[in-house]
Image 1 (tube, rainbow, N blue to C red):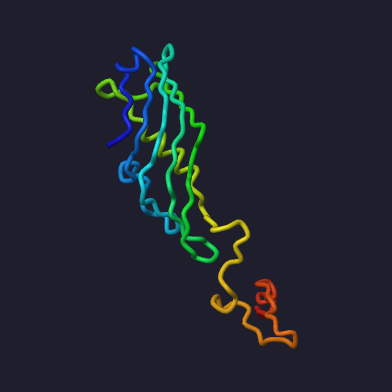
Image 2: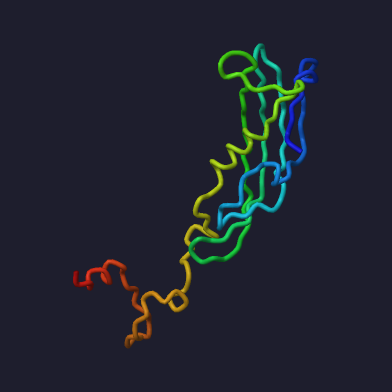
Length: 162
């Protein structure tokens, strides 16, 4: 069920909106391989009727189940916008579409979520990535001090004879 705002109810007083929106209703797509949406969006919003517009303020959050792009470890982060504000004009060129005295807020939530979802999520800021042994990069014999030496990708490219 989309997040609908009834303008007739809003004429009398400001509305408090609280609840959840299922992920399927947000229509965010399943094309991302490292970010998975499994739980609903939770919102707490206040809508106020202005002269020729509606002002919506509040917060919403959505749990994101991610795979770290460096080490592939699954982790969950809470995507949240604590101070969300939306201005919806009711007249003029940019007026919002109204159906059955209701305005659908779902597309506006979707847009801000898509802009805020991390493109390359990391389990932690300094994630070292996969171990050298598992990744197959930098396999060199152990030196006298028994440590692996890191090989630069540029050093390997410089060895090519083109």
